[in-house]
Image (cartoon, rainbow, N blue to C red):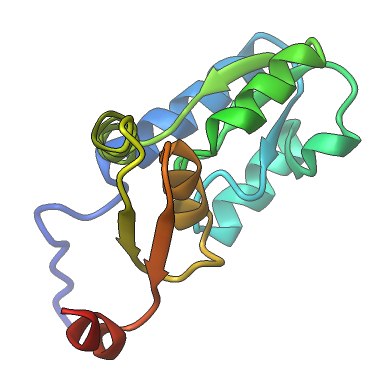
Length: 148
């Protein structure tokens, strides 16, 4: 049997960047926490956890390094972490961060922001947090079609 690896196999650059940030902390002999799994890959999350980078709840962390997962988080969580004295390392995917910036800029006058996605997914929750006005989350293609 011949096995052919796709030209673009492996992590996207946002995930690769986040993993490298986590590995840098480990190399420095430090432990760190992430708000939920840093990426959607159980094997990687388990390996990082064994090396000292563990998913945790922000309210349970009293000191140390906090890596913002690739999905991003709302700004109020970052502010809270900084107020607690945590060192925040932002590993948000640059594409996701771009969406945060767009939502923040376009909603600054209080306009409605519409997000299409799973309201429980951390990326959608993060995006929602950057909106300055009302937010509507549409959770299915059918609902999106009906909305338009």
